[in-house]
Every structure is written in structure tokens, then in C-alpha cells.
View (cartoon, rainbow, N blue to C red):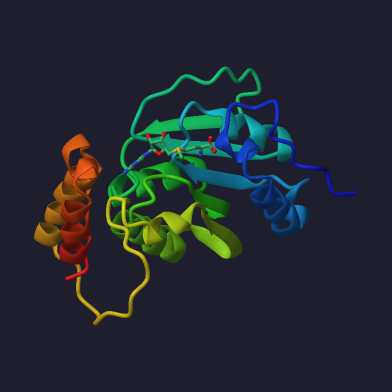
Length: 198
Ligand SMILES: C[S@@+](CC[C@H](N)C(=O)[O-])C[C@H]1O[C@@H](n2cnc3c(N)ncnc32)[C@H](O)[C@@H]1O
């Protein structure tokens, strides 16, 4: 019988998004009793790693975050890495050390920045996800927030390639957008959003 995924006693924002948990249950139903290899990009304080460890009772749970964290794990089934989701060499090393045959589940709950999410996705999907494995990208809605790093509300636009310079300019504009000064001048925010989409 499917075990219920209850995040209420774990320090994770997944406890707030119970509809996500129902989807996780649905898609990982058959994996529950297997020796799954699960990788989560972005783990904050590690609460979700404990949740996955207790849900997948034979699983090896691997986390990666910009910030180093300590997780109290007597089971020894949690591995933690420190670094950036877009560092493909690091992703290769993590896979070699923890899932040489590929991950069964990969969750990106990390930067929520489109370009970084894209780099991790293609690298992990092509090289380190088992055939038929699950790849989950959480909180994708941020990509449609004008106030987000590289987000804009949906408007059809021509296809542009990735430009590192434009990426830096957009990040600066997003910071200005959120600054105290700009929030007092709605026109300034409007101009920034227009600039971001061109
Ligand atoms: C939404 S929190 C993760 C929440 C966690 N998955 C949970 O369910 O409790 C996002 C995390 O991603 C990390 N992060 C942001 N950008 C990153 C990047 N480029 N590489 C690695 N970690 C990053 C942040 O430090 C933060 O801890």
C-alpha cells in the first residue's frame, strides 16, 4: 500500500505545498520500496533530505546546495554536497560517487533561475537520470513573475540565444526592481520590466 508523504514534521517548505506531495506520491508509488538513488538540488536546511530518507526507506538521498549544511542522519543514507547547480563537473562527480548507474529521481528545488535550471536539467537528464526516471522542477511559476531574477509575465517573443552579458544586466535590473527606491516609483519598475523583455 502507498505510504502517505507527510512533511508536516520536517523543516521543509514542501510542508506548505501539499498538492506537490500528492503528485510525488502518485509518480513515485512504485519506487517506494526500492533502493532508489534520489538527488535534490537545493536543500536549504536539509529537512527535505530527511523527508525523502524516511519515505524511501531503502533509498540513498543526495543533496546539493550553495550553502554547506549539517544534517543529523544516523542512518548514513544521506550524502550532502556543497556547490552550484550549474557546475556540471560537480554534478558528474556527485553522480560518480553516489549513483554511477544513474538517479531514479532528480528534484530541482534550487535557484528557480531559468538559465541555471536549464543547464542542470540537460546535463543531468542526458547523463545521470536512469531511463524512465523522474525529473521534477519545483516552483517553476517564478519564471512568470516580473519581480523574479529572470522572470517576466508571459508575452510571446522571438527566440533569443543565451547571452551572459544580458543575464548579468537582467540580474542587476531585478535587484534594482526590488530595491526600496524602485518600489516607491512604480514607473521605474514598469520601465525595468519592459527592458527585461527586450
Ligand atoms: C527553496 S530552497 C530549497 C528548499 C528545500 N528543497 C526544501 O524542500 O526544504 C532553495 C535552495 O537552493 C539553494 N540555491 C540557490 N541557488 C543555487 C545554486 N545556483 N546552486 C546550488 N544551490 C542553490 C539555496 O541556498 C536554497 O537553500
